Image 1 (cartoon, rainbow, N blue to C red):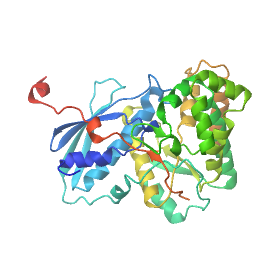
Image 2 (cartoon, helix red, strand yellow; image 1 turned 180 degrees about the vertical axis):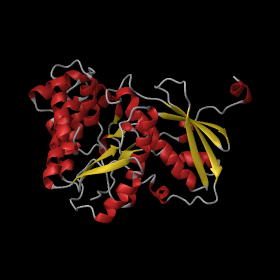
Image 3 (cartoon, rainbow, N blue to C red; image 1 turned 90 degrees about the vertical axis):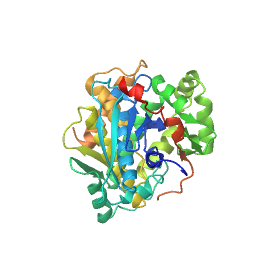
Image 4 (tube, rainbow, N blue to C red; image 1 turned 30 degrees about the vertical axis):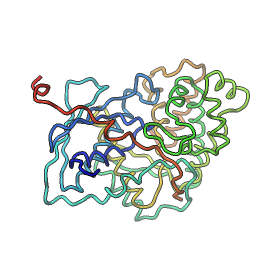
Length: 353
């Protein structure tokens, strides 16, 4: 960004942090040349996947980690503090950047833009001991990785994802999300998921676009024409089988506060960027955990008959599983422009208030 300030250059990289369905639940406010505010928000009011805003909080953690990594390239150490007394729906962070001559550029900075979601089949080559060691070290203290690598473990995991996708694709509450977050006939998308990055063939994508035109079509195709089978096979079962491994990021203690979920997001982003630096691809999957928590907490999430029973069954399978080729990048979610994410600068009068 020619002519931009240092913080704007840092934010221009930071905005490439991952977020659920490319929602980018953040806006930036520059305070001065060494400070800025991240205004976060969540989508719990209209997105069934954003239970209590925790997925959005994980995304905000990934953003903060990405900004910290980007700042290191300028010899700046980032510190952050979440403002207290605000609604949980709008977590807000004050970021400060200070020069540190001892701070080296984080090697992961080179992979921030490169990192993306891989929704297609991957290579079956087993991860090496060196790769696993690097990935396990990347998550930092307080977290560990549980691996599922054997053919039997990958089969169980893939079948769970395949069944979980049926839940996602047959409930009206999820339909509303899918209808809004897919950009059709697109290779790239600034604020949604392009259909060419979904991991389905062109014919299935064309059928999905037609079916998602109305809930009545979805219901009809699902009931009479096995409408979920093709996308579930292509997006869940086949990639679940055709990969090196599945993993679970496990925290030493249960997440209870916003800061816990933000910290998990920071750990996950370092894992993802480390995987990218090793030439590995990844497809994150949160929805089995989200629906299992709906079940555990006794929270109703759908008015559609049979959804609660299916979720309970899936939660049991998840508990049983985990315990109480890098293909060419053909398409991907992009990001909103930095200008569209910026809020008006702070003025002396507004700061006084």
